[in-house]
Image (cartoon, rainbow, N blue to C red):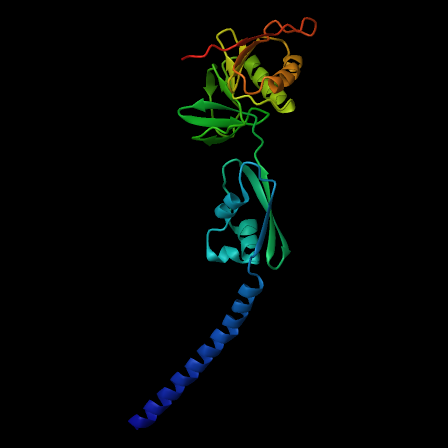
Length: 251
């Protein structure tokens, strides 16, 4: 009687093992085929300026599952939010089972201010869109002003409201004329000085800076790699007075 029960128990166990093995084969084979057929081999990154393709890949592909084209697409399109500094959003397009295209949309930044050891970056509307411990080389820093408050995703509040419009106008013109400006400094009289590498540009206080910066573009191209102080405080549409002096070297 005991032997019969043991044989019956063994038969049940074998049947369960066969079913389990069959289930694994039924599930495992499609998974293997799925993984091999959709193995990510080709990645194209479009639109990234501040980041290299490798940096984007390192941020997005963080596990073995991410090297599956479909799983990577589904992960970031529906399940996981992307949070990379200076990037507004990222879109994905599956080109074929082994290739994906990544579209990077960077935040539009026009200037920055330093506050409590952090650089806070703002857009063309003066909205603070990002903070970082390092300064981007191609973004001008505003110095010499006191800000009432600086809050991420909110508008900068300057000590004088009219200065806010001046800041936005200057950053817009710098972008328009493709000027390489490191610093925009306001003194106590709200007179403006640009620092462009080893060149200091005294702009003074004007009602509009468009013509002066248009002229400055050509000057900076001609004086590249020089150490100068360029005085444009008396520059107007009519006079076009510009004085350039070499900076004194300190031995």
